[in-house]
Image (cartoon, rainbow, N blue to C red):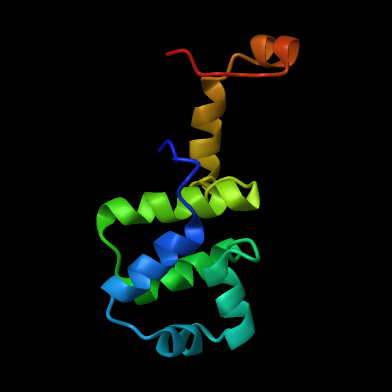
Length: 118
């Protein structure tokens, strides 16, 4: 999913909490995080939480299907990481082998970049 640079994780999180009819206090208490840390996340002062906490957040929020990928993409973009859902799926060794079969290593190593040109 391509993420618009103007969209921020903190804004999406605030919207999702509201849509889930949860108070901020109920949300951060259920997550087991401290109030200051929660408000730092919500204000964008700190990066989105780590993957395990992202998954816990989604469990509480019961998001719309289209919000899930966006949630993970925005968090990953701001954390400079692979999206948590993709990273979790890549724990499957068979899938990793299958993905590697499609990689042109000569091109990857030659250019230092690799774009899938299927």
